[in-house]
Length: 570
Image: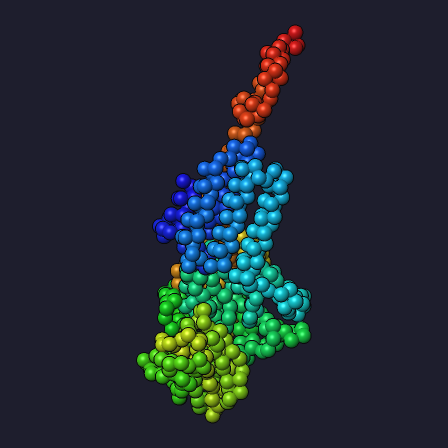
């Protein structure tokens, strides 16, 4: 019945949803399926006991045979053929060995020997098929640059004695390299990823996916780095194209660490208008950043300005425009080398950034005056990335290579020019009101801020109901910016701001734990006073049966003759 219910759960989305805590997991559905193994182990143990007791009948062998055939019929052409064939062969071998044993053709020693051989064969095939299915990574190249990155991390830690700062690596081995190297960053890949935070990151042009339970650094702009608190960036190889934001900090072999020219603390002053910001995850990321920057600094001049494409060309691809930044494409039949090419001409010195959404792409290559600068992978999630610094008469070329199986679709390509004067003016405003940390831990931070006028202290910390704020020792209400980030209202002047985090339900959990411990202690003291347990010990019937009748009778006589503690004292 249990196996049947688990099978139904794997084929019913409602039950699957409930099993996962009312949340659909990413990439690995049916994570409760390990219970199959648990139930099968219980069944296997029961079969093992039957073998020891020599209670297995021919009906059991027939049931095993029918079940093996049923598994083959149900799985054939549905699951991996190789796994289905070897599973069926192994099951038939077990049936045959059991049959020979029951018919007394195999003695006990030969039975256990053949069973051991088949079990070892099954384990080997499971390992081989599983390894071939998921592939492997060799030890030498994974991770190949760990020494260089570790050296740079040590150099940063030596020169920067701040209580807290964030950093990222331009290209990671995993989406959780933060845990691999032990640095504070903004990337996260977890089933517990906050959906609101994911939407916020996506609205700012970072790589993020609600369905994928992830958000991570792949490319950015100065605004992204400001409002996420990024101070350092490490490139394992090559250089960053964003020379406006990042300046060289240290090098180790081929790896380079960069420092943010527009670094802001984890908390900083902004205009109170920032509370009006609305996050649009599906909107234009550059326009989202324009709005965020304008509301925070009260500078009306747009930070980013759209750049019109000069020419569009497709190799084995037919392209048509649907409006600014949107292009439809159709790949010519039989083509396995389809490429979309876009050219942008510059009339003045400028810093360009691009945003690409192309699900059928294999890579996006950026060239300046025909010279390749960098390449990016946006096949999973779109994001903003730098094109570099351009002078008058320079050309920026963006090539999007399409996958071999691509046929048609829509690509979104935004190219924007950053106004460096507006960026400098805005940074000057925001940097004057940075929070100077005096205390920092995983669950609390405190610092001093000087506000030039009434406004907000914005924190690059996602909001959760467990956060509590104080301003100058007085409880303060937390403002939630864009339904995601924490902010606290501040008046003009110097203030001490404290944030503390206590998980929702933590206090209740502590009370329950203390109460449970008190009950256990009371029960233990009662047992000590009575000199015997409150509940009699339970002896299994199987153990009672295993005791010989005459010995059991003797034990009962001895038990009845035992004197009580009071009789012993007398």
